[in-house]
Amino acid sequence: MAQAAQEAAVRSKTVADLEFVWEGKDTLGAIKKGEIRAPSEAYARAMLRRQGILPTRVKKKQKSLLGDRSIKEKDLVVFTRQLATMLNAGLPIVQAIELIGAGASNKGMQKLLKSIQTDVESGERLSSALAKFPAYFDKLYVALVSAGELGGILDTILLKLATYREKSYALKAKVKSALFYPTSIIVVAFIITAILMIFVIPKFAEMFSGFGAELPALTSFVIKLSNGFVRYWYLVFGIPIAGLVGLRLAYKRVPKVHAAFDRMLLQMPVLGDILLKAAIARFTRTFSTMHAAGVPMTESLETIARTSGNTVIEDAIMKAREAVAAGQRLSQPLAEAGIFPPMVVQMINIGEESGALETMLAKVADFYESEVDEAVNRMTSLMEPMIMAFLGVVIGGLVIAMYLPIFKLASVVGG
Image (cartoon, rainbow, N blue to C red):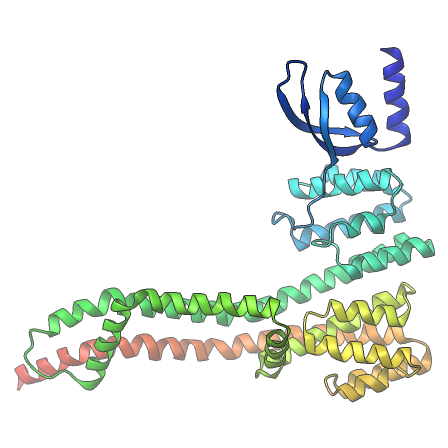
């Protein structure tokens, strides 16, 4: 017993336990399954045999690469800031991750950080441990952490990365609000119209059927439209839903559809301007952060292109990367792309000439982040009266169409 305890103590100090799933038979021949923690597969098998289990299969438990929906972007932003602060204060990385995990209120986040802690304790670099969870830590995040580890400035890089993630999170929230507001209004208007057409207008139609007089053209049209809604209600709801699902699948799986849709988004009035400014803000902010971390320019551009979120921007950045690799300055291919505004190209050109590219990129990012904020506010202010007018025309038109025969009948009776 004493020897076993000593072995366990030595093992806990030298290497972290890994998780294994196992299957085997007990002394009675019954099949058993379970999970066990051990430093290696051989050690796990030995532990099972000491417990009276004859293992038939022992396999390292795979970490899920799919995202836990309970873990939000805000949780990752907080983790980055806390880790940067603790490392800057001199805490060992394993202890810092353990403390952050213990203080996390999110169960999914606790489990994620425990897995990262286990990998780092077993000797892996932090960047390698993070790379196993691409649903939470993208290539950009991993590349910056790796650069910090190689340069011995992980705490500094994490502080910059925390600031970057906070600004990126705020920018995403603004763009989402710009997209959500008009979409939600359109959906609500469609639902209200469908309810009126299917449930309300047929009641009026029954009442009007006993009038024995010709109905106004608008009323007759609305009743026919309502009959179509009632008869083909499954198509009324099914076609929009199927169209949205089909478009989403095509966007994800068909490159040509993806590219055409991204191009169309950038060309849309008002919204396209917001999306372009957000893309420029993301590009310059990311590039500034990676440049400050000492990541080579060609590697930075490739990573930024892959995380741009728009194929049009991605193609422009990849062409710029090829030009830079061939010896050109970055500002030249960006100007030729025709997507980036002259001010952006000029600021990058000045940064390259003065050796202050990081500073210039950060200033451009600050400017366009404020531009996105103002553009979203302007769009919201502009759309409010337009949406009210739209709802007034649609709903008001239906109400008027139903009351026209009543007004007509009242005038006949009154006459």
